Image (cartoon, rainbow, N blue to C red):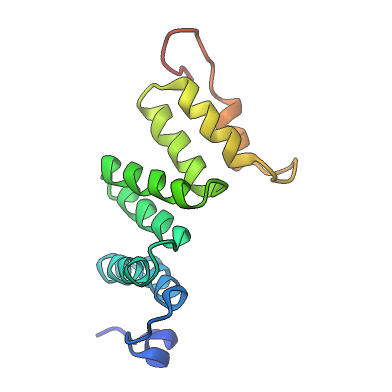
Length: 140
């Protein structure tokens, strides 16, 4: 039996405060309890459907599970709510890159780096690695 996280003791899962469920969900997922983490993230979104950061985290879990259509839907939903969600844009860039949709991948990678410091490597390195051939898919 695993020891409960401090936040679990704090509100015993009964809170109606979406960020608390989001934090707990992320902690559980990082701890390896992905199913429980996903449930907490979904609870956060049920409490506050505009909690786009929780939606992006749900997408991250689906992406890690190779459930790409589900992940993509979550990331698209997140940017519908929060158009400047850089993490959701970066993840969509990865998905579109895998799908060979260069123009969409680049557009989302660029939005993923908007406002980041010049030395930020995340999406910048992925974007820099994309070679575009007009009318074709991304080549590395």
